[in-house]
Length: 497
Image (cartoon, helix red, strand yellow):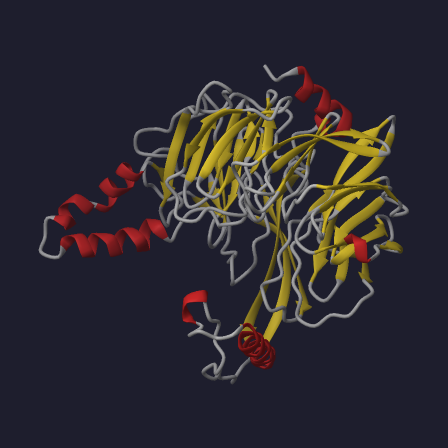
């Protein structure tokens, strides 16, 4: 059973979402990473693993298409991508100023590296002229994965792939595109309803903020906070310099029947404000980073990019937010925690922890066997927590101990299976018995398994026991309902191609 605190939070924040099983925006119905209602989910996979119910048409991600997460509304899965194609006859020259990691800078002084970066960005912008850029919104059928409609519009270069998760509200999709362009399209067919050019200078910036619809306003970060009229896209207000931000997303909170908004802003602050006017109501020092705040009843959880910043809990009121505790044993640049049954589950670095929401006391912690987990957020359904990074880990939302239920990797066909099962399918034990077999086995595993799986920095959607995940090159849907007929083994699933 969920705690009374959690149940009350679901009721207070967005009562209408309880009437339908959707995941209509970044981090779900209430933007807290949790599915308010869910059938019982599986606690173990078939011995041979689980194949996806369907795979979508190819939808490249990461540097080839961005890091937006899928959403689900009205029987459709929606996804936004930003991608490029080389113009006919164009030839890309060898770069004079390639990206330099820390260990490749050869003792450059800060001033020298700053000049190098200036030249690198200028060179990248020049090379970008050889490409045509495009923004795509695709709608997939939740039952089959087939493409229902696809909307492609011309776009422009950004120095890092423009990313963001769509927001669905009242039959409309809200999109923050490249070049400070905000758009609204019909969720039924992708036809444009309005487009607004946000004010401000633009060079090659990229933003990953997701729209929030609150009190009839569409709120988003694009260098700073903006408020648009959700119906027609008219600019309602533009945030001040104290409302700067790029990659975090605002959340809604209802207080005494009035819908307010909350957002992490630059300088390590979190603010409460009126959606339609932008009027700031309160401001606290949270040291939060690009994560999304989590609001549960009258509690707000913020999460910073370092252990010093930590995870903090505040008690909310209309005119203030009072800090209650600060947990300083985890930090992540962009991951957001999830609350289930009075406990906060948080991932940071390689650490996964469970923290009491009332006291901030650590209830348990464990170490994840992952190379460099970051940015990807936890989601929850049916008293289970899911973390999809590299592979997928599903564990019980148990305050007493870390109790893993499912730990899997993915292959090229989308098969979700234990590492041992994947190795068995690839016959790696036989390969390793050959001369130089260990080296060959490592290459095969990396190609077939290591480079597959969930797209880093994205989070799944959980709807009616279905798990919808953005893989490296397409979207996949898995049936996680307990008692459902398992799709086991390595057979090829139905495809949306």
